[in-house]
Length: 170
Image 1 (cartoon, one colour):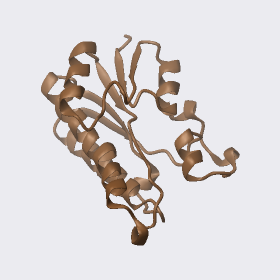
Image 2: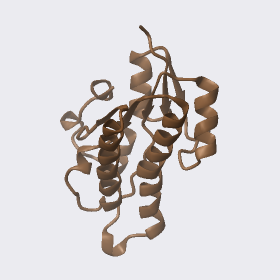
Image 3: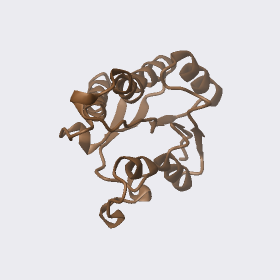
Image 4: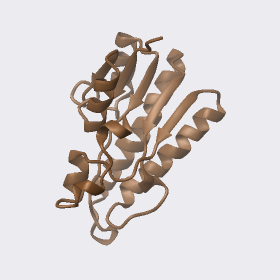
């Protein structure tokens, strides 16, 4: 059976790889749906009536805590964690019970210059566990280093041979 999959953050590298593997996928890019807006999420879900969702929406802001910009830190929490919560809540209310969230190994282990990202991904992992306890088919994927534009932005010049491929995560 081919499930209709809807991907939030559909312009991300991982979303593109998922779409290549699963042709019955609708990828919703950020400009079309900001995961910080529950009304936009609900509108997209109702329009496409997916069987399952994948949340690839995410941001990463490299900054030391002592020099950090609170607005950039909050952006990571709002997009990566609260955006996932908003998606989960709207899915639950519409009867969509299969949800996959891209978390990160950074959600299990803090990293320098990534406190907001790590905290948001840790929260995503716990959110998914809570959803499962509430009876949803919820999953988090916590890859390590993946060869994406976001990774290159955060770690320019890193040896790409040490990175997972987008297809392996998809």
